[in-house]
Image (cartoon, rainbow, N blue to C red; front, side, top):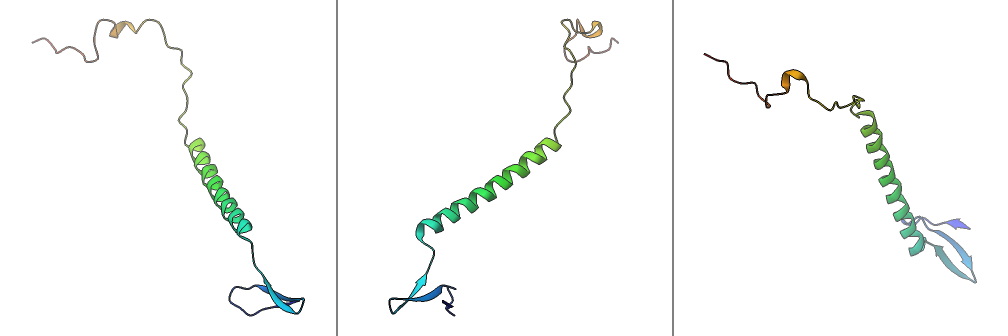
Length: 84
């Protein structure tokens, strides 16, 4: 077995008097491409989820009361204009 000096870096050997080069099959190329894509996608998803978890807002555990506070009972959102 000898390594050829071709730019494809294929391994050549003698089989039955002919030189033959081993190359990666199409199925293996596609499998490698898809698995590399999945690895990159999962790494990015993990990073995004990690950042989202670190920057989560603090949840408040306050119980919402049935009645609003006494000072805001009769008013709307804004306070009334002062009397002149």
